[in-house]
Image 1: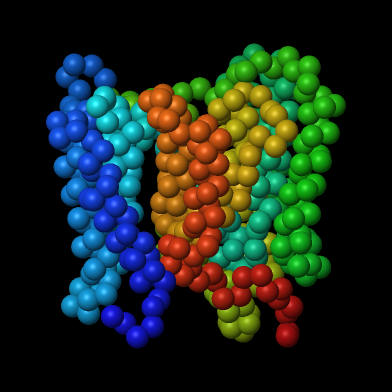
Image 2: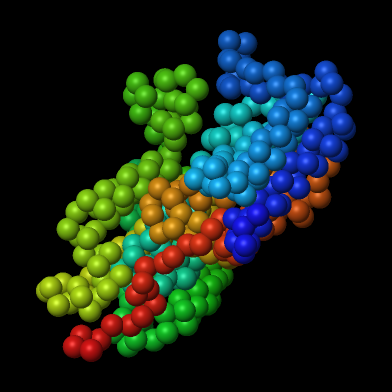
Length: 415
């Protein structure tokens, strides 16, 4: 037993208790012959797997006990973190197996829905990534997303009837959504970089401003909308969309879904393998040192905040132009704040943020799946599940997340 308990030890204790409950209590509630059929596709030829429910629970509980024990043993402490991460990942198949016990469920639609719901969160977290990596806290992602959703749809409301091509009008509206997010980001940069306003206050002001402006625009122009519920078209990538199992999920989808992956990969490459990325990280970690070697800190921060706003505006367009085909007050429903939680979960890295976004997307998709399977869980609990996960992540349960050293600190040249 270590002399002083750390966060990982408390997590291990909780995990050990859960493992013991699974083995001693939960497993006995299922019959020995009760199985869950996991389908991986539709049709008779689709692969499937029969999972014995009781055996799965016992195996999972024993693994939890072993993983918890590894944290306290010096010989296995080196692999303890990996063991705990895998224990967390086991929750995903466990939820599917237990919720569909005695029946069957299709895994692929669950994965597809998780990816779809993770799209705006991933884009929002990438928006926050570029701003905060350059040293500017951006809790205004929510407001930028809401502005993009509103003005993107408003643009389609006005220009759609004037154009012969609905598709072109939609894509032009997405561009306007991106630009509207950039305008809000410019305001955030003007307040927090030029006037050195507290960045949390600036972001809060923008979120409140976005709520008011978008609500006014909706009441003034959109309540009698003639635009209809038209959304961006589905695009099938030739050849790739025909790949069994993953083809229809990854390669037959809508444009902003594809753009999320493009921005994710480009963000990783640019941030860690280009001069621009190096300078961005420099002004976010040690702006004074960056300034002494000739990097314009103010210009770099402005550029990255504007980029952040553009990505957030694209995330907003996902709501109104790719998914719903209309605009409602507050339709982003706090996804911008959840995106920042995903950014913290991912420790300010692109792929880490995407992993956090998938976690939140899965938790939201889980609510829908529970309702389809008639799981006896109150509907109100299912609705708050993504926000509960947000609280857990931001509380530090997943480990200490260290932000860029100079984030939130205004910089004045020569000081």
